Structures are given as structure tokens and as C-alpha cells.
Image (cartoon, rainbow, N blue to C red; front, top):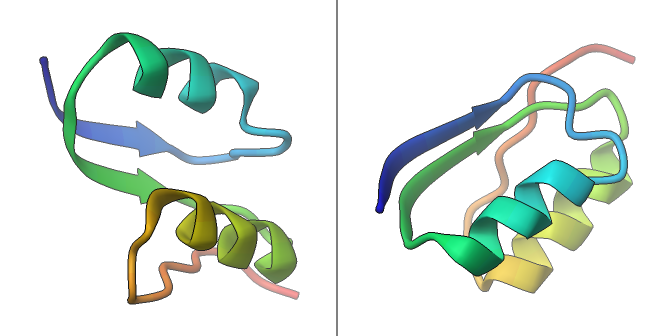
Length: 56
């Protein structure tokens, strides 16, 4: 079980998706400068709110 998973640079998300399949994660904090990638992540996880860290 993972309480909070922090990923400062999600990029393709391979590490996150691997960990998400193996462990129950209560809270996820991911960051990336690519907003479309964050939106895709939110759609995958079913989260209603958007989390975006980084700049343009």
C-alpha cells in the first residue's frame, strides 16, 4: 500500500503506471510541463480535478 505517490516529472508515466498496477495508492501528486499529458492522466484515473505543476 502506498499512501502518497509523488512524481515530479511524469514524462511517459511508465514508472507511475507500473506502481499503480502493483499497489493501492491513496493520493497521487504528479507534475509535468505538458498539460495534455496531465489531462490524459486524470481521465485514466477517473479524477474530476486537474492537477498541473510546472510552467510553459
